[in-house]
Every structure is written in C-alpha cells, then in structure tokens.
Length: 486
Image (cartoon, rainbow, N blue to C red):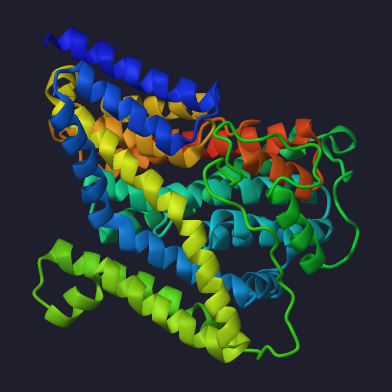
C-alpha cells in the first residue's frame, strides 16, 4: 500500500474515533477499538493480524502500567478515607499563610496528591478552596479557582502516579522513574509561573467580581464535609443544572472516569488523629524510592536492594501496604476495605482506556506509519516537539478530555519516536502539555470548578480555560530548552 494511502487511512481512523466520541457519544474505549480495527483492515493487515495487533498492544501496555495504575488509585482511595487532604490544606494555611495559599495548595495538588482519584480530589478540595478564598483577600475566588484548575490538570499528565502520566510513560517506553524526575522538574515551575501570570492578569482587570462570580449552586452550610458531599452528588449528574454532560457520556472529571456518588471528609468519632506526615509517609516513601531507582539507573550503579525497592511496581506496592496499615490505625479495617472496593471500581475504566490506547499505538506501528512520518521530521528537536504539542492540543479541543487526548497523541507518535531523535520522555511531556490546551465546556472539570467555587460560566472560562491554556503554553516553553540537554 502506498504511503499516501496509509496516511489517509490513519487520518480517517482518528477522525472517525473523534466523531464517534463527540457526535454519537460512543464510549471512548469502544471508539478507540473501532478506530484501531478500521486502521488495521484498511492498511492491509488482514483480520487475524489486526486482531492480534490490537490484543497484543493492549497486553503490552498493561504489562507496563496496569499494576501501577491500580496501586496508585487504591492508595489514593485510602488516603481520601482518612481525611488527609483536608488536613493538608489546613496545615498549608497555617504554615504559609493565606497570601501564598494558591501556590502551596496548587503544588500540593499537582505533586503529592496525584495518587488521589481526580474526581475525588476535586470534590474534596474545591469546597475547602472556596471556604479559604475570602482569607486571601481581593480576587481570592479567581486565584484559588485558577490554581486548582492548573494543578489538577497538570498533575494528571506530568506527575507520577497521575493516570495520564503513567499511560504516556508506558506508551512511549519511558522508565517510570525518569518520568517522575522530569515530570517533577517540569510541573513545579509550570504551576508557579502559570498562577503568577494569571494573578497578574486578574490584578490588571481580567476578573470582574460582579460578572465572573456566582454562588447560585453553592450551599452555605459552612462545612467542607457537607459541601464535599453535595459536590459528590453533583459529580454523578445530580442537582447542578449548570453542568453539561461529557462528550463521551461518562461522568468523570475528564468525561472518562466514574465520579463518586458522595465523598465525606469529616472525621468520624471513631477516627484516631494520626500526624499528617504519618498519613502521607507511605506515598512519599514510594515516590522517593522510584526517584532513587531512576538515579541508580541513570548512573548505571549496581545496588541490588535499591534496584528492587526502586522498581515502580515494588515501590508503589510498598506505598499501598503502608497506606493501608496507617488507614487501619486511623479509620479502622472496615473503612479501609470499603475504600479499596471503591478504588477497584474507579480504576476499571482507566485501565481499559489505557489498554486500548496501547492497541491504537500497536496498530499504527504495524501499519507502517512510523517509517513514513520519520522522513517528514528533521533531526531538529524543536519542531517535532511543537508538532507533538499541536497534535495533542487539537485532539483535546475536539474530544474534550485531557487524558484521552494525551493517550491518543502518544499512541500516534510512539512508532515515530526513534526517528525523531528525541528522548521519549520529552515526547511524553510535550503530548501532556498539548493535551492541557483549551479545557472548556466539554470537560466535566470545567463545570465542577464553575459550580463548586462560585464562578459564573464567564468566570470559569477565564480561570479554567485560559488558566490551564496558559499552563499548556508555559510547559511547552519549558520543555523546549530541556531538549537541548537530552
């Protein structure tokens, strides 16, 4: 088959996948499999080879990240049950004061809390942010809403164990420790610079409190726990009349993941007050072990015990076991088991979506697209990264899901990564950065932040759409200089 025919059929497969999701509201998992089947058959792979490629690609990516995603979600579910997020925010407020709260809370959400399931993290932290916004002073709502939007979206694509970050690393063959180190190096300045830029714009008149703030859907109960539970009801399609359904028909914050029916964050009488550091110690230990394992690998050191403990699967398993032990001590065995059950339910669709992303990548590779596109790129490291960013941005504008657009872009680009002459970690980060561009009304995150933080739709377009787009541009501008050293 000619190169032009392969390119055309690949374009048709991607476009058909987008149309199925957006226009006909077919589940993204089913849409990606249909696109992969079409691509395989249309490029001459044949029935048997197409099915073999799709199933093989699914299995290969599950080998890479399946356990990691499951362990991360389970750990986050237990942390949620212990009320760790609420206590962390209160601690940040005491230590750093209200003026720095957008930055400190943003960094906490974008880094240390990324094992928490996105909807759960949003539902718990948004009411807390809303209550704390007046303490910041003028423009408190605008700054907190922007900080949360930027941190939530950047975290899932850049920071291990964020769902999209794990999927990107697996699809592009990036060692997870390396993804953690470079993601951390990127996400910290991205969050700080983006919040600073948006704060500057707000102070220059970009925010109009009379028009951009609206507390219609906020319950004035004065308690974060009550607001969190109300938010959980909204996130499953309840009482919020200002909310649009996601293009994929799902109810998760990205239109992909299932939202919890309700989230209670208030401490119950039987809870024991464990130090905050103890609650997060297992998660932080796991991340440190992964980072140490990456350093050992980069320096080519032979330290057997650290190579074992620094393996991402072992490190996250240690973190999960430790979090479970701490959870049993603080909230009891029954609630830990309930949290684990919830975590298994939440991780299911994420695992399947990630797997079919691997199926698409394998089909694209088998069709020969990598060899064809490899000749279209120069050895320059700048232009290809901008193309990667642009592809992910276009996919996100069309589909409305950060996670799905990042996975699809990485699936398309994985076969040509060797031909680009670029370290795969940069491609992963560029795809993640592009998938952040233009979070808008097709995203459930948009509507949850709009209602839970007391914004009008006009206000959410500024704090969420513009804010996260600024982060997308800042991130790619930081990634380009990184390419000079890799």
